[in-house]
Every structure is written in structure tokens, then in C-alpha cells.
Image (cartoon, rainbow, N blue to C red):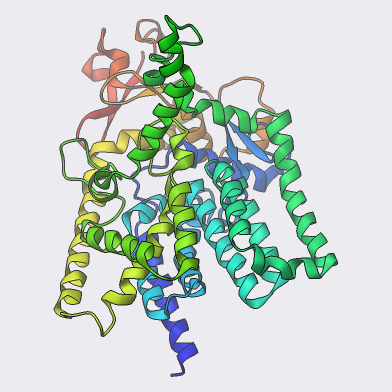
Length: 541
């Protein structure tokens, strides 16, 4: 077999491994569609059927949700999958799982373009295909995975355009970077800074773009086609501003409590402890937290509660390899690799540092390709004939397999057991039961509170009812009340609702805490995989 065909065969193997890790039991794990996933699915269904979102807005550039706006890219990508597979869990998750798998292939091509040999690039592609950080988020409808695909595609085609002096690859790079900005919020800060850095570093190699004025004009037109609508959203609508404000670091109580709001007790406080310094220190601390090795290798994914064995962003066995790869790049002679690595390495966690929550792996997903570069650097030596003793390679492979089996157990058994409620487990079963039995009752009332620890979490059950009932989007868009069929969606008030005639009340256990219903009125109970009661179905007289 010739070298080119053999390489394609191995590249197909990388893609196949990525597909297995992302599509195996995709509809079942994670254990339930999250609120965001259901919203993406139903809005895609609404676009397919009516050309409008659930609110009746025709082909929106940003999709309004409850207290937020969702990027449009994932929703439009989901439309053809729903057309083929119907309004199902698989159709909602398949687009991101597919793009996540394709990212593993693009990573290989990107690394080869960077100057790594095919062997180390293919091994890194396999590593990328099985790494916990990317596998988990590729199995849910997470916009960050879609955005990362376009970022990696953009970087590869950017480098390819230079080596091939190709305007075609330059066009693809501009489109890919632009789509990544439209796809997820973190890229809206990362991409402008990153692309400016790329242009500055590679400016001498980009001179060919200015040689053909017509093609340069096409590139500028493509850029404006993507940029102008986004600027309109940012300046004249709440689509961008609402999301930025809702996740801003300035909402964190730990920062609010220490700020002076311009009122200082003395000059020393004004000079050395002013609000600007406090903000800088707070954001810098959040930024540096992303470089914590415990986050990287032991607790980053938070599949289990604190105190239990968990999974990091990477497998533990890769700790020495990643650290060695970082050192090899830093000390290496290849300025091209070192420059791109350092630019990406220090910019990667920056968008996440400006948002609420400590060490948020989803918002920092843009950082992942940096570690692929590190792994490719160490693989190029670790799997070469120069490396001695060779027995260590076999030990490493065995340990990787052990880590994969451990991830399988913790992901398919422990993760659902401890965190199913955070994926709104139970609302699917409620919606299906309500839709199938709506003619038996005068009213069905579904609570919007959930959780085993108390009535503190609020969900949006209406979107589950729309999704699992395949509710006609056109009817929903023209509704005159908030009810769906005879289904009402609100918090249960047992002292009053128990007087309702021939009704079904679906409530969290906390809704009955002060006045539990009689056992004979309870017709069904949904339990979380961990064994605690999730929802109770109660019939009134």
C-alpha cells in the first residue's frame, strides 16, 4: 500500500476511534438532555417546520431563551439532523458529536502543517479522540465544541494558505474564524486577540494576499458579511450584552464584597487597595487557577462530588508527557511551533477568567489544542527509535487503557449517580407521561423546581413538554396563554392545588414538605439514579 493511502487509512482509524468515544450510547449518556440541549432541539425543529424560532422570530441571528440568548450556529446545524432523525435526543447531540470527531482529524492535519511528522501527529489525533475533556463535551450539545472545530480548522487553513500560497485556504480560514465567533461566547474575546497575534507573527508570509487585489477584496467582503451582523447584535440588541452581563466576573460576590465602589477611607487605601487593583487581582487569580495541575489531571471534570476519586481534563498517565512536551517546546529550536504554542497557551484561559465560576472547563475548551501540540512534541521522541528503554512505551499504552476503563466506569456509573439532577433528569419522563395521559385529567400541573438538596433550583419544564410532545411550533408561536394543551407549568401550592378537580400534580418532594399527600394519592414516583426521590405524581379528587 502506498504511503498516501496508508496515511488516509490511519487517519480514518483516528476518526473511527473518535466516533466510538462520542457516539457510543449517545442518547443515554449524559443521562438526560439539559435545558439548553432541549431548547436547541426544539428551536431547530421550529426553524425546520416554520422558519421561525419558538418566539415567532424569523431566522434569527441569535436565539432568545429564558434569561439568555443562544448562539445560532449549533441550532442551524441541528436542523438537518432533526429532519433526518426526528425530534430525538440523538438528533440533538449528533451534530456536536460529529464535529467533535472531525476535530480530531483536523488536529492531525494541523500538526503536520506545523512541522510534526505524520506518526506523532496521528498518535496525537488518537490522544485527542479519547481525552476526557473533549469526549465529555462532545457528547452533549455544547456550542464550545462547535466553536473549537472552527478554530482548529481556521488555524490549519491559515497556516496552509501560507505554505501553499493559496487564496482558497485563506478564504476558508476567514470563514472558520468568523463562524467560531458566532458559535460560542469565549471565542468572541479569544479570536480577535489570537488572529491579531497570528498576523503579526506571520506578516512576512502573508504578503502574497496583497498581490491579487480582487481576491483580497473577496476576503474583506467575507469578513464584513460575518462582522457587520455581529456588530449589529452587539450594539443594537441584547443578544450579546445579556450573555456577557449574566456571566460577568463582576457579579461574583467574592469581588463585590471587597470593592470600595470609589469610597476610600484614606489615601493609602486609594493608592494601594483601590477598586482597579482589586479587580485586576481577582481576575488574575482566576486566570492563574487554570494552571493548577490538580485541575488538569485529577478534578477538572467534576464527575463526582468533592472527596471522591474524579477525572481531570486529561488522563493522569499523561502528566509527565504533557509537562515534558511543554518543556521541549520551550527549549526547542523551532520558533514557529514555540511562537504559536505560547500565544495560544497564554490566551486560552483568558476568556474564562473574565466570567463567573472557578475553573470552568467548558469556557476554557479553546485551550485544549495547546496540549495537543505538547503531546505531539513528546510523542515525536517517545515513540521514536532514539527513545530507550522501549518497554516504557508498552507500559504507557497499558496505563492509557487502564485510564480509559476507569473513565468508562466513572462516566457511565458514577457521574449519573451523583449529578443527574443537574442535567434535569426526570423532566423527560414527566413530559412523556403528561402528553400520553393529558386526556385523563382536567389539568396537569408540573412544578418548575427540582433537586434533592432543597427547592433552590428552577427549571424550564415547558421546553421539555414542547420537545417530547412534538408540539406544533406554529400553534405554540400563536398561543394566547402560557399553557400547553391542559398542562400548566408552575410551582405546586399543595394547600390550594389539592382542591383542584380531577387533576394531576407533578411535584418535587419539597413542594409537599409541610403537608405530605396521602399515599393513596401518589400514583408514580421518579427517582434519581442515586436513589433519592426526584418527582412525585399526585392525583386530586
